[in-house]
Length: 62
Image 1 (cartoon, rainbow, N blue to C red):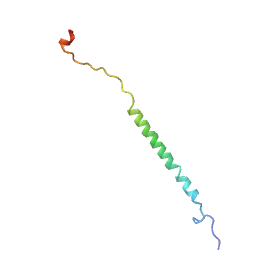
Image 2: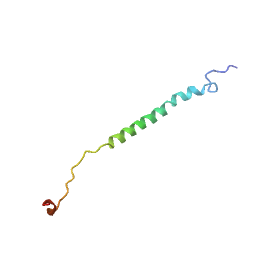
Image 3: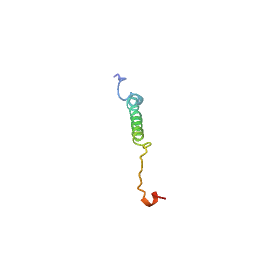
Image 4: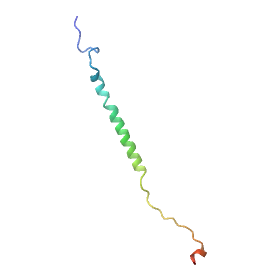
């Protein structure tokens, strides 16, 4: 009786997991970059707005 080399018993575990392993870290990196871009675009320096205060007439004359 011959044993086939393509049997799942003799397959190396590295060969099967090598396809799935790079997908997870790449997906994590893409999510982190997207999150950083979202936070960067929402935050940052806001343009200054003029604030007008009402000054009473008695303070204007002094």
